[in-house]
Amino acid sequence: MQTIAEILEAAKAAGSIGAAGAAWQAAEDGTGLEAVRHRMHQTLAVMRDSIKDGLNPSLRSVSGKVGGQAALMNTAAQLPRFGMLSKACAYALAVAESNACMGKIVAAPTAGSCGILPGVLFAAQEEHGYGDDALVDALFCAAAIGRVIALQATISGAEGGCQAECGAAAGMAAAALCQLYGGASEQAAHACAFALMNSLGLVCDPVHGLVEIPCVYRNVGGAAQAMAAAQLAISGVPCPIPCDEMILTMKDIGDAMPQSLRETGDGGCAACPSMCGRG
Ligand code: SF4
Image (spheres, rainbow, N blue to C red):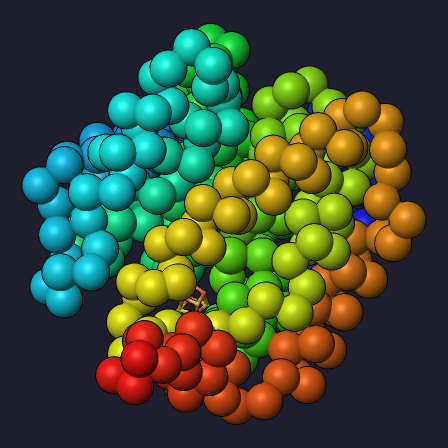
């Protein structure tokens, strides 16, 4: 399954993108469906722990610039006027902060963008009561989509900018959330396409070359993008540009990006006077 079109074809027989992805993985590994599902449950457990770790209010990165902010967001997210979006953002930030503080995370698809997928999925679980099996199915959906993005474009900020990391993660999370909501496979593909569309051009500009600023906040933005994209698709709004085209467009834009905006720490946020000692 090298394109979204091929995934959708496989999903017709399997029932969903997640089921098609799990069957593909089992065939690839030669270990059987039960074994790959067991492994994905272990992945889910690591994601859950990384949220807990990141919510520790005394967490700080070596630079001291990151940590403790997810705890603040999570406290606010408990207020009655806030809902799933606030939780998804707080959890996404928690995992990203945990990564910046050298905690154990699941790259999804990269370490820099590791908060978006777990943030969205665990907020949905809390809000709507989905079981772990459903979350594992959603992870297989995300993995199948992420693999296509990696094959057809890139998931490296140094190659394609942050659109290839947080943009790809938002696309994966949008599709996974759409499947979790009971959407059709075509809707999940539309959700991914919307998230990618709305992330196009996002540059990679880590301050001092550290995966801290703006990275942890990009995870918050990515979670919101994923939720909005899933909402569009599940409402029956089709993305006017097919997901496969959007993936190739993301690659073209990445190729056109100047070197200063591809993880060199020379442009964007990294070049702001307050960030490079000139402010
Ligand atoms: S800004 Fe660059 S290093 Fe930071 S998350 Fe985005 S792609 Fe990764």
